[in-house]
Image 1 (cartoon, one colour):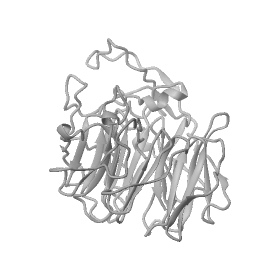
Image 2: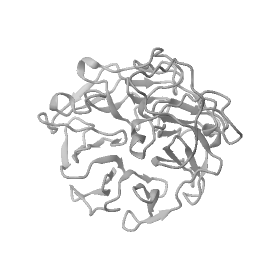
Image 3: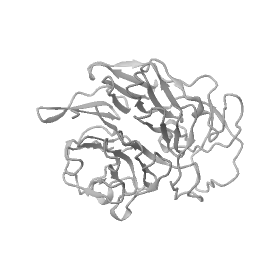
Image 4: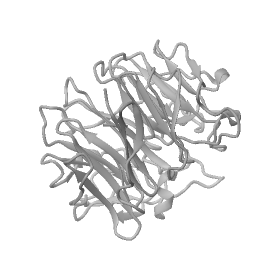
Length: 394
């Protein structure tokens, strides 16, 4: 059973360890630096942190000794000639069905390294990184060098191969509000899923784009959004423009996939060939940002719901976690140990994780909660942390 929890926070990296039956936070690492994602490469135990330097830009940092010492790693960089078609924050009179304007191009730069995903044991050096503005980078030497995945970057859904010239198709990738802090409105890849039984089967999800799949290790990509609905567009079943907040899969049963979407909770039992909506708005289980899947039971997942996009706070001033054990047909709500009054916690898309019987989440108000019985009861591990961006068991 995991005995460490990794937090990426607005002011640094926090490692919470269990010793003698008690959980205790170690001194802050990367002090004063926003850390948008921290995770453990369980193939060799290396810890990775994505740093969001305000002045120096995004960087990666890693530790090979359990977090005692850290070293910066070569940052990701777009190759010369990488361009994309600029998107702007929609106005109130935005019409997604209106004829497209002439494309405006911009040279690509890394604004944010949003998440990291590690390859299988048969791929000892493989690491994936998702970025804003929507680039997928791959390393095959443990992060010493990185290459942009060109088939995804040059996909026809975002204008085609802009290295070679102007767009040959319309850009269907819209922006994410998470990029506004960087002065742009561009898409971001926040979810990367590797099928542990077949590592050539990959998925990625990007805000205001949707889910895409590759069955050949990233040499080609296609949309995987059938069954998903967008209640904010004139055509809710459009191929592109979906807004998954986070997508994950059961590690041992990877055909079972889950996503918390802007428009609700979606589930697939056939590897994203089709999705179905499994929200339960009557229970308050609908909108939110994170979702976690059980490692061994593909029918089981957890969510931490929020009220709505326009009111990003807990429902009715109280926190609860919901779990399904039957593929979203029914949900159970758990509140024991969680505040039920004056709670305004929002849990970001990477700030919920589960392993074995343990579930942990943390909020933008610096509260960290842990369950050791699959979410049925909770204990608070601290109330005074900086806003938390990511939670991962190590």
